[in-house]
Image 1 (cartoon, helix red, strand yellow):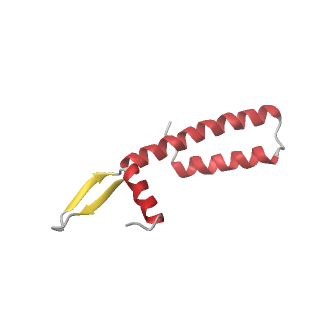
Image 2 (cartoon, helix red, strand yellow):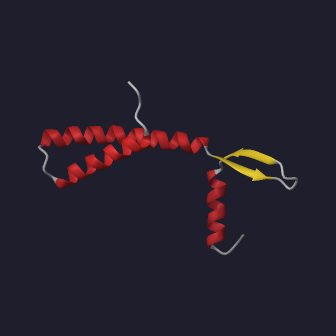
Image 3 (cartoon, one colour):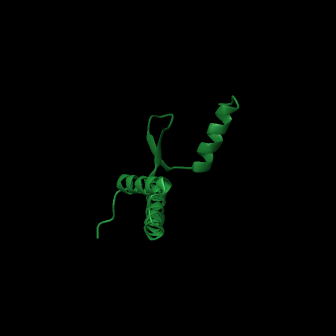
Length: 88
C-alpha cells in the first residue's frame, strides 16, 4: 500500500472534521470517522516532523562560499524574538 501525500491526508482530515462537526453521523459512523481522523493526524504529524528534519539553511560566509547547516529551531526562534524586541 502506497502512503498518501501530506496534502491528501490533510484534505481527508479536514473533511472528517467537517463531517463530525455537522453532527449528522450515527454514533458508529462518528467513531469510525474519529478513528480514521486520528490515524490521518498522526500521519500528518509524522510527515511534518520528517520535513522539519530535512530543512537546511544556506549561509554565505564572508568569502562567498555556501555553507550548509541543519536547521536550528532554537536559534531561529531566538532570532525572531530578538527582532520582535527591536534587536538585530
